[in-house]
Length: 467
Image (cartoon, rainbow, N blue to C red; front, side):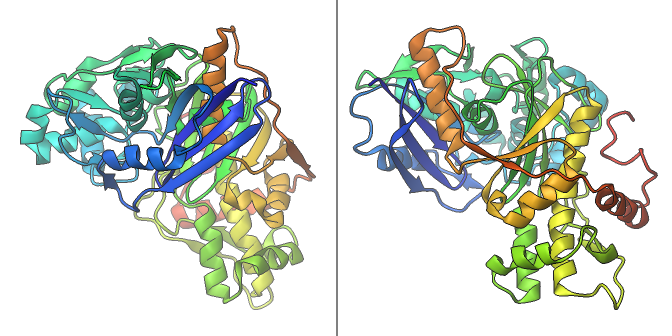
Protein backbone atom coordinates (compact mmCIF):
# COMPACT_ATOMS: atom_id res chain seq x y z
CA UNK A 1 0.00 0.00 0.00
CA UNK A 2 1.36 3.42 -1.01
CA UNK A 3 0.87 6.02 1.73
CA UNK A 4 0.41 9.78 1.36
CA UNK A 5 -0.20 12.47 3.99
CA UNK A 6 -2.27 15.63 4.07
CA UNK A 7 -1.81 18.53 6.48
CA UNK A 8 -4.47 21.05 7.49
CA UNK A 9 -2.69 24.03 9.08
CA UNK A 10 -5.86 25.83 10.14
CA UNK A 11 -6.69 28.73 12.40
CA UNK A 12 -7.41 26.64 15.48
CA UNK A 13 -5.23 23.57 14.99
CA UNK A 14 -3.01 21.48 12.75
CA UNK A 15 -4.43 18.16 11.61
CA UNK A 16 -2.58 15.39 9.77
CA UNK A 17 -4.09 12.41 7.97
CA UNK A 18 -2.23 9.51 6.36
CA UNK A 19 -4.13 7.81 3.55
CA UNK A 20 -3.91 4.92 1.13
CA UNK A 21 -3.00 6.67 -2.12
CA UNK A 22 -5.25 4.41 -4.20
CA UNK A 23 -8.50 4.56 -2.19
CA UNK A 24 -8.15 7.58 0.09
CA UNK A 25 -8.84 5.46 3.16
CA UNK A 26 -7.46 7.13 6.29
CA UNK A 27 -5.07 4.81 8.10
CA UNK A 28 -3.59 7.22 10.69
CA UNK A 29 -4.35 10.73 11.96
CA UNK A 30 -3.26 13.26 14.54
CA UNK A 31 -3.84 16.85 15.62
CA UNK A 32 -2.41 19.62 17.77
CA UNK A 33 -3.99 22.93 18.86
CA UNK A 34 -3.04 26.50 17.97
CA UNK A 35 -3.54 29.51 20.24
CA UNK A 36 -6.81 31.41 19.86
CA UNK A 37 -5.45 34.59 18.31
CA UNK A 38 -5.50 36.79 15.23
CA UNK A 39 -1.72 36.89 14.99
CA UNK A 40 0.74 34.14 15.78
CA UNK A 41 4.43 33.27 15.56
CA UNK A 42 4.68 30.86 12.59
CA UNK A 43 7.05 28.72 14.63
CA UNK A 44 3.95 27.60 16.54
CA UNK A 45 2.64 26.04 13.29
CA UNK A 46 5.88 24.12 12.89
CA UNK A 47 5.71 22.82 16.46
CA UNK A 48 2.05 21.90 16.02
CA UNK A 49 2.87 20.03 12.81
CA UNK A 50 5.63 18.12 14.60
CA UNK A 51 3.23 17.18 17.41
CA UNK A 52 0.35 16.26 15.10
CA UNK A 53 2.52 14.15 12.79
CA UNK A 54 4.59 12.42 15.46
CA UNK A 55 4.80 8.71 14.65
CA UNK A 56 2.51 9.05 11.62
CA UNK A 57 4.85 9.60 8.68
CA UNK A 58 6.73 6.29 8.59
CA UNK A 59 6.33 4.85 5.10
CA UNK A 60 4.72 8.02 3.69
CA UNK A 61 5.96 8.74 0.16
CA UNK A 62 4.37 12.15 -0.50
CA UNK A 63 2.55 14.88 1.40
CA UNK A 64 1.00 18.32 0.88
CA UNK A 65 -0.15 21.20 3.07
CA UNK A 66 -3.59 22.81 3.04
CA UNK A 67 -3.59 26.04 5.01
CA UNK A 68 -5.68 28.91 6.26
CA UNK A 69 -5.86 31.53 3.52
CA UNK A 70 -4.86 35.21 3.38
CA UNK A 71 -2.45 35.42 6.33
CA UNK A 72 0.73 37.52 6.07
CA UNK A 73 4.16 36.05 6.88
CA UNK A 74 7.04 38.52 6.39
CA UNK A 75 10.66 37.32 6.17
CA UNK A 76 13.84 39.39 6.20
CA UNK A 77 16.84 38.94 3.91
CA UNK A 78 18.05 36.03 6.08
CA UNK A 79 14.63 34.31 5.81
CA UNK A 80 13.81 35.06 9.45
CA UNK A 81 10.26 35.90 10.49
CA UNK A 82 10.09 39.65 11.12
CA UNK A 83 6.93 39.78 13.24
CA UNK A 84 4.05 37.48 14.19
CA UNK A 85 1.95 36.46 11.18
CA UNK A 86 -1.29 38.43 10.89
CA UNK A 87 -4.12 35.97 10.20
CA UNK A 88 -7.17 36.17 7.96
CA UNK A 89 -9.48 36.83 10.91
CA UNK A 90 -7.65 39.99 11.98
CA UNK A 91 -9.75 42.99 10.89
CA UNK A 92 -7.40 45.85 11.77
CA UNK A 93 -6.72 46.47 8.05
CA UNK A 94 -10.36 47.27 7.17
CA UNK A 95 -9.59 50.99 6.62
CA UNK A 96 -6.63 50.00 4.45
CA UNK A 97 -8.93 47.92 2.24
CA UNK A 98 -11.10 51.00 1.67
CA UNK A 99 -8.05 53.10 0.82
CA UNK A 100 -6.65 50.56 -1.64
CA UNK A 101 -9.99 50.22 -3.43
CA UNK A 102 -10.11 53.97 -3.94
CA UNK A 103 -6.47 54.28 -5.00
CA UNK A 104 -6.88 51.78 -7.83
CA UNK A 105 -10.01 53.51 -9.06
CA UNK A 106 -12.82 51.53 -7.46
CA UNK A 107 -14.07 48.03 -6.75
CA UNK A 108 -14.57 47.25 -10.43
CA UNK A 109 -10.88 47.81 -11.15
CA UNK A 110 -9.91 45.38 -8.40
CA UNK A 111 -12.36 42.75 -9.60
CA UNK A 112 -10.97 43.08 -13.11
CA UNK A 113 -7.38 42.85 -11.88
CA UNK A 114 -7.60 40.05 -9.30
CA UNK A 115 -11.12 38.58 -9.51
CA UNK A 116 -11.93 39.94 -6.04
CA UNK A 117 -12.48 43.19 -4.19
CA UNK A 118 -10.13 43.33 -1.19
CA UNK A 119 -11.50 43.14 2.35
CA UNK A 120 -9.65 43.09 5.65
CA UNK A 121 -8.92 39.36 5.44
CA UNK A 122 -6.85 39.69 2.24
CA UNK A 123 -3.05 39.79 2.46
CA UNK A 124 -2.78 42.93 0.34
CA UNK A 125 -4.63 44.96 2.96
CA UNK A 126 -2.42 43.63 5.75
CA UNK A 127 0.67 44.74 3.82
CA UNK A 128 -0.75 48.27 3.58
CA UNK A 129 -1.40 48.18 7.33
CA UNK A 130 2.22 47.11 7.86
CA UNK A 131 3.56 49.95 5.70
CA UNK A 132 1.43 52.47 7.57
CA UNK A 133 1.95 51.24 11.13
CA UNK A 134 5.30 49.40 11.15
CA UNK A 135 7.40 51.05 8.45
CA UNK A 136 10.60 49.56 9.86
CA UNK A 137 9.22 46.04 9.35
CA UNK A 138 7.89 46.96 5.91
CA UNK A 139 11.34 48.22 4.88
CA UNK A 140 13.00 44.98 6.04
CA UNK A 141 10.45 42.66 4.42
CA UNK A 142 12.35 40.67 1.79
CA UNK A 143 9.79 37.90 1.10
CA UNK A 144 6.03 37.63 1.72
CA UNK A 145 4.49 34.20 2.22
CA UNK A 146 1.10 32.74 3.08
CA UNK A 147 0.78 30.30 6.01
CA UNK A 148 0.79 27.20 3.78
CA UNK A 149 3.75 28.61 1.82
CA UNK A 150 5.75 29.05 5.03
CA UNK A 151 5.10 25.50 6.22
CA UNK A 152 5.97 24.10 2.78
CA UNK A 153 9.21 26.12 2.90
CA UNK A 154 10.06 24.70 6.33
CA UNK A 155 9.51 21.21 4.92
CA UNK A 156 11.45 21.67 1.66
CA UNK A 157 13.55 24.84 1.74
CA UNK A 158 11.73 26.09 -1.39
CA UNK A 159 9.58 29.21 -1.66
CA UNK A 160 6.51 28.00 -3.55
CA UNK A 161 2.76 28.48 -3.45
CA UNK A 162 -0.13 27.42 -5.66
CA UNK A 163 -2.78 29.24 -7.67
CA UNK A 164 -5.57 28.46 -5.17
CA UNK A 165 -3.86 30.17 -2.24
CA UNK A 166 -2.27 32.89 -4.38
CA UNK A 167 -5.74 33.94 -5.53
CA UNK A 168 -6.58 35.06 -1.99
CA UNK A 169 -3.72 37.52 -1.66
CA UNK A 170 -5.17 40.42 -3.66
CA UNK A 171 -2.08 40.61 -5.88
CA UNK A 172 -2.42 37.56 -8.14
CA UNK A 173 -4.68 37.37 -11.20
CA UNK A 174 -6.77 34.23 -11.83
CA UNK A 175 -7.33 35.48 -15.40
CA UNK A 176 -3.69 35.90 -16.41
CA UNK A 177 -2.28 33.38 -13.88
CA UNK A 178 0.38 35.92 -12.88
CA UNK A 179 1.42 37.91 -9.84
CA UNK A 180 0.49 41.60 -9.91
CA UNK A 181 3.63 43.25 -8.49
CA UNK A 182 2.11 46.67 -9.19
CA UNK A 183 -0.64 45.94 -6.65
CA UNK A 184 1.90 44.56 -4.19
CA UNK A 185 3.86 47.79 -4.60
CA UNK A 186 0.72 49.86 -4.18
CA UNK A 187 0.11 48.22 -0.82
CA UNK A 188 3.63 48.04 0.62
CA UNK A 189 5.37 50.86 -1.22
CA UNK A 190 7.91 48.43 -2.67
CA UNK A 191 7.99 44.99 -4.28
CA UNK A 192 9.39 42.20 -2.05
CA UNK A 193 10.00 38.68 -3.26
CA UNK A 194 7.13 36.24 -3.72
CA UNK A 195 7.02 32.44 -3.93
CA UNK A 196 6.90 30.67 -7.27
CA UNK A 197 3.40 29.51 -8.22
CA UNK A 198 3.64 25.75 -8.73
CA UNK A 199 1.45 23.63 -10.98
CA UNK A 200 -1.46 21.80 -9.31
CA UNK A 201 0.17 18.35 -9.34
CA UNK A 202 3.80 19.43 -9.00
CA UNK A 203 6.33 18.00 -6.55
CA UNK A 204 8.06 21.12 -5.17
CA UNK A 205 10.69 19.45 -3.00
CA UNK A 206 11.46 16.81 -0.40
CA UNK A 207 11.61 16.77 3.37
CA UNK A 208 14.84 15.95 5.16
CA UNK A 209 13.55 12.38 5.41
CA UNK A 210 13.02 12.17 1.66
CA UNK A 211 9.22 12.52 1.57
CA UNK A 212 8.09 14.23 -1.62
CA UNK A 213 6.10 17.43 -1.02
CA UNK A 214 3.39 18.62 -3.42
CA UNK A 215 2.40 22.24 -3.98
CA UNK A 216 -0.32 22.41 -1.32
CA UNK A 217 -3.13 24.98 -1.44
CA UNK A 218 -5.55 27.10 0.59
CA UNK A 219 -8.07 25.49 2.89
CA UNK A 220 -11.17 26.00 0.74
CA UNK A 221 -9.45 24.70 -2.39
CA UNK A 222 -8.14 21.73 -0.39
CA UNK A 223 -11.64 20.96 0.93
CA UNK A 224 -13.02 21.12 -2.62
CA UNK A 225 -10.38 18.62 -3.70
CA UNK A 226 -11.11 16.41 -0.69
CA UNK A 227 -14.82 16.43 -1.56
CA UNK A 228 -14.13 15.58 -5.20
CA UNK A 229 -16.04 18.58 -6.55
CA UNK A 230 -16.71 19.03 -10.26
CA UNK A 231 -18.23 21.95 -12.18
CA UNK A 232 -21.86 22.27 -11.09
CA UNK A 233 -21.07 21.15 -7.53
CA UNK A 234 -21.34 23.73 -4.74
CA UNK A 235 -20.41 23.54 -1.08
CA UNK A 236 -22.21 25.23 1.79
CA UNK A 237 -19.96 25.02 4.83
CA UNK A 238 -21.49 25.97 8.19
CA UNK A 239 -18.89 26.43 10.87
CA UNK A 240 -18.11 29.46 13.03
CA UNK A 241 -18.45 31.40 9.80
CA UNK A 242 -20.19 30.29 6.62
CA UNK A 243 -18.76 29.75 3.14
CA UNK A 244 -20.45 29.03 -0.15
CA UNK A 245 -18.27 28.04 -3.09
CA UNK A 246 -18.45 26.14 -6.35
CA UNK A 247 -16.11 24.79 -9.00
CA UNK A 248 -16.21 26.77 -12.25
CA UNK A 249 -14.38 26.40 -15.55
CA UNK A 250 -13.87 30.15 -16.03
CA UNK A 251 -12.69 32.95 -13.72
CA UNK A 252 -15.23 35.32 -12.21
CA UNK A 253 -15.04 39.04 -11.42
CA UNK A 254 -17.71 40.52 -9.16
CA UNK A 255 -17.46 44.30 -8.77
CA UNK A 256 -19.86 44.23 -5.80
CA UNK A 257 -17.30 42.25 -3.80
CA UNK A 258 -19.88 39.64 -2.82
CA UNK A 259 -18.14 36.81 -4.69
CA UNK A 260 -14.38 36.37 -4.34
CA UNK A 261 -12.96 35.07 -7.61
CA UNK A 262 -10.60 32.45 -6.23
CA UNK A 263 -8.84 29.68 -8.14
CA UNK A 264 -8.96 26.02 -7.11
CA UNK A 265 -6.27 23.36 -6.76
CA UNK A 266 -6.90 21.61 -10.10
CA UNK A 267 -6.51 24.38 -12.68
CA UNK A 268 -10.15 25.45 -12.50
CA UNK A 269 -11.73 28.22 -10.41
CA UNK A 270 -13.48 28.42 -7.05
CA UNK A 271 -15.72 31.52 -6.69
CA UNK A 272 -16.59 31.93 -3.03
CA UNK A 273 -18.98 33.84 -0.78
CA UNK A 274 -18.28 34.17 2.95
CA UNK A 275 -20.59 35.10 5.84
CA UNK A 276 -19.59 35.97 9.39
CA UNK A 277 -22.74 34.53 10.95
CA UNK A 278 -23.29 30.80 10.71
CA UNK A 279 -23.26 28.16 13.46
CA UNK A 280 -22.85 30.81 16.16
CA UNK A 281 -26.38 31.99 15.30
CA UNK A 282 -27.70 28.65 16.49
CA UNK A 283 -25.58 28.76 19.63
CA UNK A 284 -26.83 32.26 20.49
CA UNK A 285 -30.41 31.13 19.97
CA UNK A 286 -30.04 28.22 22.38
CA UNK A 287 -28.58 30.63 24.95
CA UNK A 288 -31.56 32.96 24.54
CA UNK A 289 -34.03 30.11 24.90
CA UNK A 290 -32.18 28.63 27.85
CA UNK A 291 -32.24 25.20 26.25
CA UNK A 292 -29.43 22.74 25.51
CA UNK A 293 -28.10 22.80 21.94
CA UNK A 294 -29.50 19.32 21.40
CA UNK A 295 -33.04 20.64 21.92
CA UNK A 296 -32.80 23.28 19.18
CA UNK A 297 -33.35 20.69 16.46
CA UNK A 298 -36.51 19.32 18.06
CA UNK A 299 -37.87 22.83 18.60
CA UNK A 300 -37.17 23.94 15.02
CA UNK A 301 -38.67 20.79 13.51
CA UNK A 302 -41.81 21.22 15.62
CA UNK A 303 -42.55 24.56 13.90
CA UNK A 304 -43.97 24.92 10.39
CA UNK A 305 -41.92 26.37 7.50
CA UNK A 306 -41.89 30.14 7.74
CA UNK A 307 -41.91 30.04 11.55
CA UNK A 308 -45.42 31.42 11.78
CA UNK A 309 -44.39 34.65 10.06
CA UNK A 310 -41.14 35.25 11.97
CA UNK A 311 -38.11 36.20 9.90
CA UNK A 312 -34.63 36.48 11.40
CA UNK A 313 -31.83 38.55 9.83
CA UNK A 314 -28.89 36.83 11.55
CA UNK A 315 -26.33 39.68 11.50
CA UNK A 316 -25.37 39.17 15.13
CA UNK A 317 -21.68 39.99 14.61
CA UNK A 318 -22.15 42.49 11.82
CA UNK A 319 -21.85 40.86 8.42
CA UNK A 320 -19.39 40.47 5.57
CA UNK A 321 -21.91 39.26 2.97
CA UNK A 322 -23.78 41.51 2.57
CA UNK A 323 -21.13 44.02 3.62
CA UNK A 324 -22.79 45.37 6.79
CA UNK A 325 -20.01 45.51 9.41
CA UNK A 326 -22.10 47.58 11.85
CA UNK A 327 -25.38 45.68 11.44
CA UNK A 328 -27.16 43.83 14.22
CA UNK A 329 -29.58 40.91 14.17
CA UNK A 330 -33.26 41.62 13.64
CA UNK A 331 -36.36 39.53 14.28
CA UNK A 332 -39.41 40.72 12.34
CA UNK A 333 -43.07 39.68 12.23
CA UNK A 334 -43.36 38.99 15.94
CA UNK A 335 -46.92 38.57 17.23
CA UNK A 336 -48.45 37.16 20.38
CA UNK A 337 -49.59 34.12 18.39
CA UNK A 338 -46.18 33.19 16.92
CA UNK A 339 -44.05 34.11 19.94
CA UNK A 340 -43.02 30.54 20.82
CA UNK A 341 -39.67 28.80 21.37
CA UNK A 342 -40.41 26.54 18.41
CA UNK A 343 -40.93 29.43 15.98
CA UNK A 344 -37.88 31.29 17.25
CA UNK A 345 -35.70 28.19 16.81
CA UNK A 346 -37.10 27.67 13.31
CA UNK A 347 -36.56 31.33 12.38
CA UNK A 348 -32.92 31.15 13.49
CA UNK A 349 -32.22 28.09 11.35
CA UNK A 350 -34.11 29.53 8.37
CA UNK A 351 -32.41 32.93 8.65
CA UNK A 352 -28.93 31.42 8.76
CA UNK A 353 -29.64 29.19 5.74
CA UNK A 354 -31.42 31.92 3.75
CA UNK A 355 -28.28 34.06 4.10
CA UNK A 356 -26.24 31.18 2.66
CA UNK A 357 -28.85 30.60 -0.07
CA UNK A 358 -28.29 34.25 -1.06
CA UNK A 359 -24.65 33.24 -1.55
CA UNK A 360 -25.70 30.50 -3.97
CA UNK A 361 -27.77 33.06 -5.88
CA UNK A 362 -24.76 35.36 -6.08
CA UNK A 363 -22.75 32.55 -7.69
CA UNK A 364 -25.54 31.88 -10.18
CA UNK A 365 -25.66 35.60 -10.96
CA UNK A 366 -22.09 35.34 -12.28
CA UNK A 367 -22.97 32.38 -14.50
CA UNK A 368 -21.56 29.73 -12.14
CA UNK A 369 -23.62 26.53 -12.43
CA UNK A 370 -25.07 25.22 -9.16
CA UNK A 371 -26.65 21.80 -9.76
CA UNK A 372 -26.00 20.18 -6.38
CA UNK A 373 -25.06 21.34 -2.88
CA UNK A 374 -22.79 19.47 -0.51
CA UNK A 375 -23.55 20.56 3.06
CA UNK A 376 -20.57 20.36 5.42
CA UNK A 377 -19.36 21.84 8.70
CA UNK A 378 -20.31 21.21 12.30
CA UNK A 379 -23.89 22.49 11.94
CA UNK A 380 -24.56 20.03 9.09
CA UNK A 381 -24.99 17.37 11.78
CA UNK A 382 -28.26 19.02 12.86
CA UNK A 383 -31.38 17.37 11.46
CA UNK A 384 -33.10 20.77 11.50
CA UNK A 385 -30.33 22.35 9.43
CA UNK A 386 -30.46 19.51 6.91
CA UNK A 387 -34.26 19.66 6.68
CA UNK A 388 -34.41 23.45 6.21
CA UNK A 389 -31.57 23.31 3.65
CA UNK A 390 -33.82 21.07 1.58
CA UNK A 391 -36.52 23.76 1.65
CA UNK A 392 -34.42 26.80 0.67
CA UNK A 393 -31.53 25.68 -1.58
CA UNK A 394 -33.62 24.78 -4.66
CA UNK A 395 -31.24 21.98 -5.76
CA UNK A 396 -30.45 18.48 -4.45
CA UNK A 397 -28.54 18.55 -1.16
CA UNK A 398 -26.20 15.84 0.12
CA UNK A 399 -24.37 15.67 3.43
CA UNK A 400 -20.92 14.04 3.18
CA UNK A 401 -19.81 11.89 6.08
CA UNK A 402 -17.90 13.91 8.71
CA UNK A 403 -14.20 14.00 7.82
CA UNK A 404 -11.18 16.29 7.75
CA UNK A 405 -11.74 17.38 4.16
CA UNK A 406 -8.97 20.01 4.06
CA UNK A 407 -6.37 17.45 5.14
CA UNK A 408 -7.93 14.83 2.86
CA UNK A 409 -7.74 17.24 -0.08
CA UNK A 410 -4.06 17.88 0.64
CA UNK A 411 -3.45 14.12 0.79
CA UNK A 412 -5.30 13.63 -2.50
CA UNK A 413 -3.13 16.32 -4.08
CA UNK A 414 -0.04 14.50 -2.80
CA UNK A 415 -1.29 11.23 -4.30
CA UNK A 416 -1.94 13.01 -7.60
CA UNK A 417 1.54 14.54 -7.69
CA UNK A 418 3.13 11.22 -6.76
CA UNK A 419 1.29 9.37 -9.53
CA UNK A 420 2.14 11.77 -12.33
CA UNK A 421 -1.36 11.20 -13.74
CA UNK A 422 -3.32 13.81 -15.70
CA UNK A 423 -6.04 13.96 -13.04
CA UNK A 424 -6.33 13.45 -9.29
CA UNK A 425 -7.19 9.92 -8.13
CA UNK A 426 -10.87 9.13 -7.71
CA UNK A 427 -11.40 8.86 -3.96
CA UNK A 428 -15.01 8.01 -3.01
CA UNK A 429 -16.91 10.35 -0.68
CA UNK A 430 -19.74 8.86 1.37
CA UNK A 431 -22.77 11.15 1.49
CA UNK A 432 -26.40 11.07 2.61
CA UNK A 433 -29.12 12.67 0.55
CA UNK A 434 -31.49 15.28 2.02
CA UNK A 435 -35.17 15.27 1.15
CA UNK A 436 -35.77 18.37 -0.99
CA UNK A 437 -39.12 20.10 -0.68
CA UNK A 438 -38.72 23.71 -1.74
CA UNK A 439 -40.91 26.15 0.22
CA UNK A 440 -40.73 29.53 -1.60
CA UNK A 441 -42.50 31.36 1.23
CA UNK A 442 -39.48 30.92 3.51
CA UNK A 443 -37.10 32.92 1.35
CA UNK A 444 -39.83 35.36 0.37
CA UNK A 445 -40.34 36.20 4.03
CA UNK A 446 -36.60 36.60 4.53
CA UNK A 447 -36.29 38.93 1.54
CA UNK A 448 -39.25 40.99 2.71
CA UNK A 449 -37.52 41.41 6.08
CA UNK A 450 -34.31 42.56 4.34
CA UNK A 451 -36.24 45.11 2.31
CA UNK A 452 -38.14 46.38 5.34
CA UNK A 453 -35.22 46.60 7.76
CA UNK A 454 -32.41 47.57 5.39
CA UNK A 455 -34.38 49.64 2.92
CA UNK A 456 -33.30 47.56 -0.06
CA UNK A 457 -35.19 47.55 -3.32
CA UNK A 458 -35.77 44.02 -4.56
CA UNK A 459 -33.03 43.01 -7.00
CA UNK A 460 -30.77 45.91 -6.00
CA UNK A 461 -29.36 44.65 -2.71
CA UNK A 462 -25.60 44.46 -2.00
CA UNK A 463 -25.86 40.81 -3.09
CA UNK A 464 -26.93 41.78 -6.61
CA UNK A 465 -24.06 41.02 -8.99
CA UNK A 466 -25.75 42.80 -11.82
CA UNK A 467 -25.38 46.29 -10.38
